[in-house]
Each structure stands twice: as structure tokens, then as C-alpha cells.
Length: 124
Image (cartoon, rainbow, N blue to C red; front, top):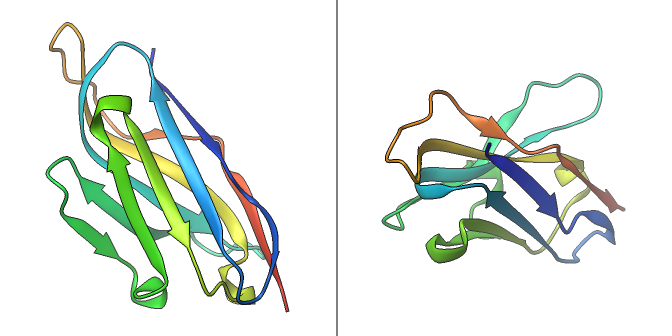
């Protein structure tokens, strides 16, 4: 069974920094893409923040370009999100995502996997 466990959220003042981590556990052979999504309060739709492919290609939402950096450690099946110059509008629950998982028996898993979410609150 594959699980994603996030850490690193918290409360920070505007202009500050936080680093999120997400580790995928289980008998994993490889993961194609890992990423971060967020869902702001008031029922807003979950949106992509950034993702990264196993080869290192990255994709960022326009709202975080130049401020956030996504990286991953394939050997540890872990993805990171370094967030700098945080703004109050970055306040949200941040969710880790993994897709294209192949487990140790070389069986591809269907669908996406999600972490439980970690709260990031940026005060003005």
C-alpha cells in the first residue's frame, strides 16, 4: 500500500519562508510525477502549485513562479516545496500528489495518490 505523508506546514508572516516535504512510502519502484496542490479557504477549487517529473522537468502555477521551488529525491521517493516571499494569498491546505507509480513487482498503480494535507497560513 502506498501512502504519502506531508510535513512542514505552519504559520508564517508575509515575506517569510517555509519548506514542505512529502514522502511516499510502500514498496515503490518508481514514481513518474510528484507535485503539490493547494486548496484555499472558502471552498475554492484545488489548484496545481507545482509538479516535477522523474527526469526533473518542472511546472509551476503563474502565481508562484519565482517564489516557490519544487525538487525531489527519487531515491527517497520524496518531493519538496521551498516557498519564499510568502503572501497571505498563499494561505491554503497544501496536498502532495503522486501519479504514475510502479510498485516493486513492476505493477503500475492506477490513479493518483494524495497526502492528507498540511496547513500553510501566511499572516499579513
